[in-house]
Image (cartoon, rainbow, N blue to C red; front, side, top):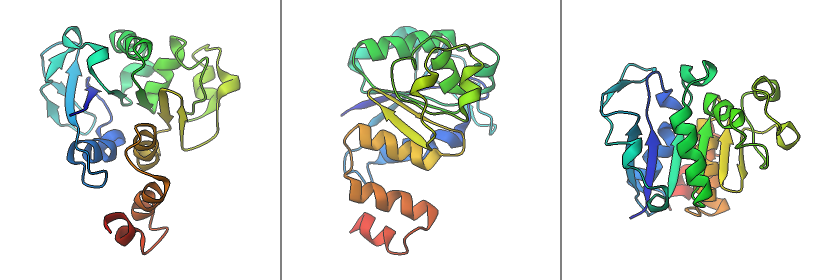
Length: 199
């Protein structure tokens, strides 16, 4: 069974990655459930922005990127405060091993800060938000809800559904028809979307 490592830290924006984690863990629409493993800097519990107390499954020191299939980074206050260095190092190791990294909201600024967005198409809350990090990848910025840039998947803070869709697409877990239906369910773009999704 494939494994998704989910970085957890104080004030992480739990809602931003909720759609993705449900689809990965349950496999309810993809037919392929994944193992979801939470990873933190230490074994101490962290508290999400929504107030949930999470006890991490493993610490960063326990993670071997080549044994994983995805690293997920959510937004949090730390990214705008210059924190998260250990997770950014881990993200670099995942990418070096050819394992996808998915980042949403402030986590995109973290990736930008260390140059991990310089060579791939990406998005975020706004182009100017990433430019404030001093990164060199603004010519690769795409004004979209979510972007798959090779092994890097990014999205802005208002796009958790599109983020989930983009990651599922990158992982090859659903075809375009099913992905269209998936997004349609949450945005009520197509009354028949749910029937198409589960049919």
